Each structure stands twice: as structure tokens, then as C-alpha cells.
Length: 447
Image (cartoon, rainbow, N blue to C red; front, side, top):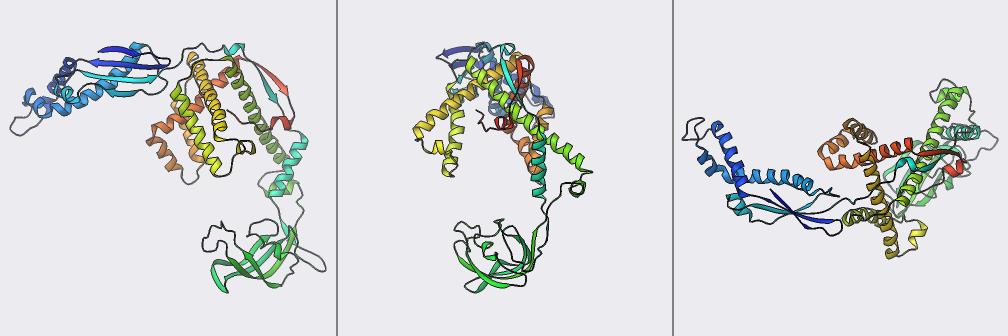
């Protein structure tokens, strides 16, 4: 095998590989000799098929397999011999006449065009100085969480008074019948339906027209379905609803006590408080790690400057820009981005792409130097966790990752990144710094 580096411009490389025809023919002879004794062909005794006949009858197909194997084997050997580390899979180009190669009359020659990993020395993680924000749940945080939980577990009781009228926040039990041009429509009727005024569960205007209603009232209201209503036959249409009010209930005061804790499945209020405090502290610890990792990425970005593989940057930018365009189409751009031209946005997001690629290469190099890896068990655990995010579709998710190695490889990358960050946090100088909850939970975009 002959390996020649034809081009070494920047991080781009073109490597030419040649495998002599004699080597391919030798492989063909060996393969034919191996399978001839096992073949059963009409006109020949079992095990007595001549090698020459095997080559004549099946030589072209066999040589095709040999060529594929030769390319797969030699490409990695060529990279090793050239002492380069690809930044992405190489683009392969045959330069020989394949018909002549398959016939055994010409060498197998091909070129690999690729971008290589930049050569740089990563910063020593032990020299990094980082700050880890620290905040623990206070009694006030716990009280707020309890009130929020109690609000989610609302209960209602019959509204009392001399003249009971429905008001904002009341729960009504109603029968209703919807009509278009006086004709009932499918899905527009219900009996004993519970409706909370102000919950906005019904179409706009429906709930508001029930304010002031009394038990036993029968009334007809008019509402217009939204233009974007999911049922196309109703979208934008004016409808009437015949309504009978059967009960009016007011929100009952929820006492946060042992009985409340028992009602939601816990032994006591103290047990509920312990659980809530643990959950809060887990949330705060996650936010603290986010900020610690952000400070690490900022420090690594500031400490490194080297050429980046253009195709790697372009691929990262394309992924970012597709999301920007989708957000723009859906009206989800931030007010700041919405004011900018595409040219300005592309300039800013290309810098983000470059930062992500640079940091990815730095973290990969630090991980490689410290023998960081992702085990099959860790990858399987992550895939199982992903499957649990889709109740009822777990099997389909697992099958998807089994059938798509590329998707599984993409899941491996963030696991690797987190493990490298954990390694750095254990050896760097990390100082705990108390901060307020507001500072901890301040939104920041990770890039």
C-alpha cells in the first residue's frame, strides 16, 4: 500500500492511497482457494470445484467484496501512517478505473479529502480558578412551595349566602348544548360539566357570560370560535350555547396541615416539608452547576485560540441557523433578535458556532489526555432515560436508537462532555460563593 499526502493546506488534507493489483489478486486467489472445497456446483463432485472455475464464475463479485474490504482497512491505516486525526469522516473519491480494478488489471487508487484536528495544547485544568454559586432553600422558599402545591390541589364547596351568584374563581356545574345556525353540532354538548370562571378552559367569552348566574338559571349565550380553532368546521364561526346552571361552588380554603399531606399521599406535614426542601435544593444545585459550567466554558474559551475545521464550524452553524429560522417563522425570536437583520444574526450566531466547536475540541482533548470515556452501560442508561420521557412509546424509542447508531453516538457526546467537566471540577480550584436565589435563577443561555 502506498500513501501520499497530496495537499496540506491549513487543516485540509488530501491523502492518496494506492493498493497494487497484485495484492488484490492475491486476496482473490486466497479467497477462491478457501471456498472452492466447500462449494457444490452442478457438473462437479462435492469439494472438487477447481479454483480457476470459482474465479471465472464468481471472481468479479468476489473482487468487489475484496475492494470494499481493502478500502475500509486501508483508509484507517493510511490515516495512521499520515499521522492525522480526522475532524470528521473523510470524503472518498476513486481515481482508478473500477472496471479494470475488478478485472485485476489495474491498481486500486483513491483519495481521501478531510479536515484534521487542530494541534494545540489544552490548558492544565489544575490552573483554572472557578466560582461555584451556593444557595440552600430557606423557610420562605419552603412556605412558597407549600402554597403553590396547595394551589394546585384546590378543592371547592357549595357557595353560601342569601343570593348566590357566580363570580370569578367559582366552579360551576352546568349542562350545555352548542348550536350553529340553530342546529346542534358534534362535540358541543355535555352534562354535569365542571367549569371554573377565569380558568380560560372554554373558548373566549364563554366563561365571562356566566358571571352573575344563579343555580337553576337557564340562559343562551353567543360566542365566536377563534380563527385558529382546532376543529376547522367551527373556526371563526358564531355559535350559541343553551346552558343550565346546576351548582355553584367557591374555592375552599386549603389548610396546609397533616390532613393535607395525607390527602396527597404522604405521612405527615413534616414529611412533606422534608421532601419539598430536598426537591428545592436539588433544583438549586442544578442551577448552581449550570452557572459553574458556564464559568468553566468561559474560562476555557478565553484560554484557547487556534484554527477551527471550517466544515465542522459550518455544520454547527447550519444546525443553529435552522433553529433560528424555525423560531423566526413561529414568532419565537427574542425581542432583541427580532430587531436584527439576517446578516447581523448570522454574524452573531456564527461566532456562537465557532465557540461551541472550539470548546468541544478543548473538552475532547482534555478528556483524551485523561482517559475519559463513556461506557456502553452509561449510554444505555441515557437511552433508557430518554425513552421514559415518552410514556407508552418506550419500545419505539429504544428501537430507534438500536437501529440508528448515529443517533446513539449523538447521545454519547453530552455524556462525555459532562464527565470531562466533572473531572475538571475535581482538580481545578473551585471556590464556593454564596449568592441570592434571584441571582442563582437568573436566566442565562448556555453556548
